[in-house]
Structure formats: C-alpha cells, structure tokens
Image (tube, rainbow, N blue to C red):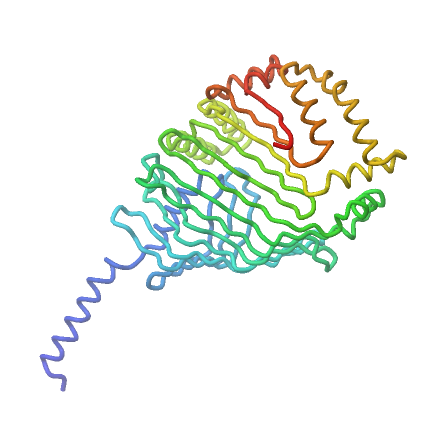
Length: 397
C-alpha cells in the first residue's frame, strides 16, 4: 500500500507539472500567425498542413509559401523546422535556427536541387510595425549549400554556397547587411544556336565561373538605404558593380506598404486589388529621394576578345575596330541629344578603348532629388536627366 508521504509527493509533482506546462508550452499557431503577419509585406503567406510543437521546436508539416495576390501561386517546401524557439516578454519570438528540407524538383525538363538551406537568429515581432528593429521580421544569417540546375541530365548552372548576414548598428540606429554567392559556374558548351555557340567558343565563355557579392546599410531614422556594392565578378571577363543610395525609406514607409498589402489581400476582387496596390505603391514612392548611384565595369580581358571577334567578322583587326568605334562614337552620342554628357562620354570611350581597364558612370546630384521630380523629367524632358541627377562618366580612373 502506498504510503501517504510518497503519495503527497507524487500528487505535488503532478500538480506542479499541470500548473507549469501551460506557462512554458509554445503556442505553435500563435507563432505562425505572428510570423505571417510580419511576412505579409512580401505579398506571401506561409501555409501548412499541421504544426508539431516539441519542447522548443516547432515543425510545420507540409509547409508551402502562397501568394496573397495570386491564389494559384504556391511554392511547396515540405516540413519546415524551427529550433530553439523562445517566446519573449512582449509576445514576440526568437528562433535559433530554421532548417528547410533539401529541394529536388523537376519541371519542363529542368531539374533544380538545393541543399543545406537554413536561417539563423530569426526574430519574429509580436506585432509588425514602425517602432524599431524589433518590429521587423529580422534574421542574423541565412544561406544555402550547393545549388544546381540540370537540363537533359547535364548541370548547366551551379553554385557552391550562398550566405547573407544582417547586423544591428550601435544603438539600433540601423542595419548593416552583406551577402555572397560563391563558386558560381555555368556551362554554355551545349548551346544549340550555331551563331551563339560560335561566339561563345571564340570568346572563351564555354564554362564561365565567378561570384556575386553585396554590401550595404539601412538607417532607420532617415530612411537612407545605401547599397554600397552589388557586384557580379566573372573570371577572365570582368567585374560589374552597381551602387545605389536613396533616402526616405523609413519604417513608417515600410509600415504603409504593409497596410497596402493587407488591403489588397482583403479585397476579393484581385484585379482591382492589384490595380489599387500599384497606385498605392506609386504614391508611397513619392516619399523617396535619389541621393546617388554608380555603375562600374572593370575589365579582365573580355574587351579585347570582343573587339577581336567582331573585328574579324568585319574583316579588320580588333585595334582597327576600336579606332572605328572611336570615330563613330561622337556622331552616335550626338543623336541622343545629351549636351551635358556628350564630351564626357566621348572622352571616356576613347580612353577606355585605348587601354581597357575600367569605365564608371556615376550620378550624384548636389542634393537629394525627389522621385516625382525624376519621373517628371523623364517624361517631359529626358535629355535633362543627366543634369538633374549629376551624371558623370570616367574611364581608367
């Protein structure tokens, strides 16, 4: 017969468990609802067949991403695992890691595979808003392992890995971000078009390799969104870098976009919803201002190969073709009716063709230019845009 002290001990343990469990158990449905509320600005929602909560792990069974605007659009993922989930005092959540199942899909004769897809340091806000970083859907890092595209059993494109990182600035004033896609490979040796294949072979582009990189920052208060570098670097071809700086992209503007998406999602007439969303987006973009931009190409021998190839097609050498281009350039540029840019373009082309190193186009007005002013100039007097935006062209600097 069970002794009373032991019985009281067991009953006390059961009572503790009964009282403690609800306080510490994760609510999987609440977690996904808040995740979707913050994700809605992307025009998509995370659907699932079932949710399984085990300790600090949440697994969405049969997960898929569905468009909120086009109901037929759906990307099936499979089981999505959130590990190290913790509910915060404000009702939000932090997640140590998010693991995606490997992808292996075939469509229209093309097979896509992707491995080791993951997100780390995910933060889900209690309520998406415009108060600060903690009101955003935020992650510290995300990446993939190998990704490949096969056609006819042959790999035509692949990457070794990709990685992106976000970090908070001091005082949560903003976010710094960077990313890289490394080990990029393409196989153009099986191109069917005879003329394109000949050009690829002559230019030595049968199997190009390279990488993509990005680096920038976002200041929340001023809304300055600065992409300092967005580059495509192809070995033995060159590096194309693009930079962009705009202001006015504040959390309030982001919140307004979220509300526009919510309104569109709630509208049962999707054609009208898409039209209204487009008009809202155009109106909201008027709050943005252009600060600067740049496009730069650094040659890694492709220019000479192009001149030699197209020169041979015309029965001249690459050097002779370069001289011909230099002679025709002023005439062609004059037809564009860009008086503020004509001399710069001509000088830059001549300098670059004499010794191909780099060519850069920058746009940096004396002060930020509101987007409506740019659109107005583009529609009314496009030849004034270089002056409005402070465009300059240089070579081999």
